[in-house]
Image 1 (spheres, rainbow, N blue to C red):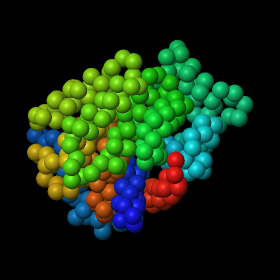
Image 2: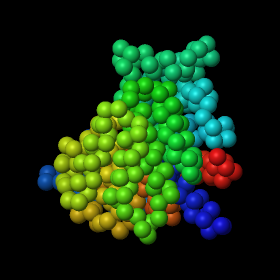
Image 3: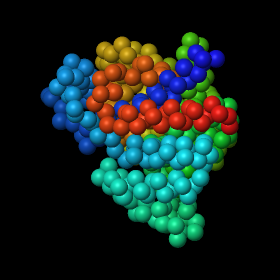
Length: 344
């Protein structure tokens, strides 16, 4: 029993730290990278990862800053911890607002900035109404729900319906479009399935099939299901990163980024040509960043899934020293685990 609890602790920590690391290490590449003639983004990211380890003494005291991805994810975790694993919309909304007002420089998107102050206003009767009013009542379908949802994926050992419900409802606080909140459901379930997967018998095709079953239940338009089916076929071949971006996307839009994070995790379980890194966790983040575009968010989501699968032991020690927010992620992971072990 103790060993099972120890493995779960490692995976909780791995997921939240993996999300932070992906965010911090992916952020420098989000606005584009000046590549040397004949170079590729993948080769540059590999070089960055390799030099990060070799030059760790030079990096001592330096922190790669986290973005709004981590700022909002820690608010999700803090609310779940405060509410003993339960979802309280008003509490979580207030934490989103306070986190933003305390540190507005974290790179929040313009659309969410419009509603974050209102989420902390006790006079707002319907806490979901600010998000519902955006885009002429259609709501946002950005990936802001998926980027912060990892703590929800950890929030239940056996009750998947609970994971789905909290992922959907908590995302609606800022993203009320079906594509936005269903993307967060997909990401939360990916974290949850990775958390409880057996690495010895793990089957990527079965993982995708489990996600397909979830999306078949929750979505009305089949957008994510169709992309998951294409992803399953892509895993049987070896597409270029350009092909992956064309099929799955690398944008701030939920359905054009979250699938890329899931694919990065599944693709990097095995060695990847062009990424000479033995550590699968390191491969995953490197590959996710190499997809370009919304690098911090895609790498953060991929890191959350991979960390839930591999555990904290596979997070490179260099990352632990140079990524801002790691200590808080470790503490929140332990607090979430204590609550979840207390039962649903």
